[in-house]
Figure (cartoon, rainbow, N blue to C red):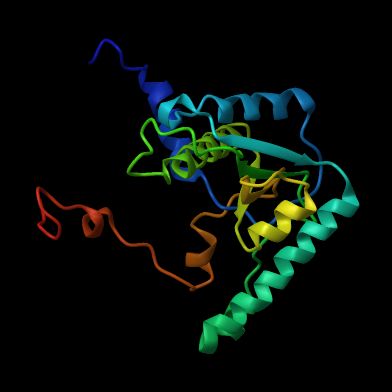
Length: 216
């Protein structure tokens, strides 16, 4: 065993959290204790970031009226998405795409403003700030699963409209509406698989060696 490796039980817990993490849409209300929410956000804040720029910003939505306005923006985009899907629109409209009205906590994850001066690791890949935010969200997601809480990532919204609603400065960008809280149960498989919307593909389909398209 590598001397730096965790114990077998600790490793199993980490892989379990990864394997059982689900994009949740069904919540049962309740609440998230302040100290627990603090632990989860601290886990998010420990994510790696390009050039240590820490581009993530989280906005906790505590006003019910504001939560409802965010939900209305999501509904507008849901209808536009259904229209864009054409023949799959009816099936799409049957899917539950968010739990904003039912979850205990709503957080908006956003990219900071004034990102242009940060060029360390971003000169040729400016989108690495978005990758860094995604790492923070994943940290939050895995920590939530370990704590027995569900989390869902909602991306059906117009970033500019949501930014204006939340008073975000120019250059900042809303990336995710995160629904967080207790659930009755975790989905045994991704919800879109269970709803026959999509099928998961095996790792083998995504793994090449040396050159694109060459299989190991």
